[in-house]
Length: 321
Image 1 (spheres, rainbow, N blue to C red):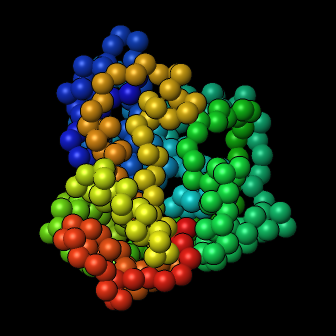
Image 2: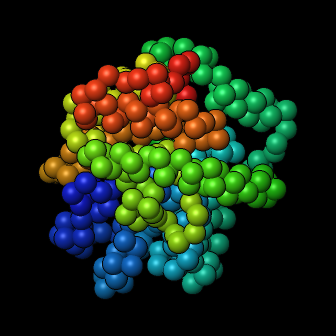
């Protein structure tokens, strides 16, 4: 069952988590949300006391936090579209050494496929990169209602199979992340200026956020909490009018995501509701430039102060996906 957040941060409320554990609980999934890591040490202690499996869901962050402290039994990575390492599909299950023998026996029943970077894969990759850089084209596609771009829905995985990844592709993706972290660190210094104006940048270490590890991190998207839902909604419109691909990410707590809501018992989650209502995310990929960051700082600052943005705060052009 879902457990509520702590106030204003995407991290499980440990008191609520402890109360949610029952005799039928077999695992706790600790989700790294946009690079803001869970308190794996505290959750691991809860699991150890009750012999519960701890799964570190690191689909939005790489490398996973548990690769440093080995608190989790398993870690999950995703290599799908828009993830930190984008191979257009697939993922990885990382297993702590004391579970290896047991898992090897359990995985033998699933068929094995190979991820090949052939012509079809190259075409898919080229299309994705073209849309990433061509803001006009992406903006038009995003506005097409039948495509449902950016919409979050649960799609059950069927069938399940093992995927043999191309090692060189994974290593290349990890190298690109390291290079992107340097660029993002420069931009974060500008974005942090907004914290004096009631915007809270939640997923970078310099803002007090709990990053996945102690090294340089690249983030999937820059994530802010607005002072209110009204200001967040105004920000999305104002930024996208100036060519910045802002969005509210999932837009709702997990228990209300289409496809999920019928599978879980919905309980009170006021902190998660408030967080979803105020969350604003911004592009953080290599196509973001200094003038885009200046536009963000200008627009978000002016929404608080009530001033009219000047030319230096505008970023003309189509939307950054």
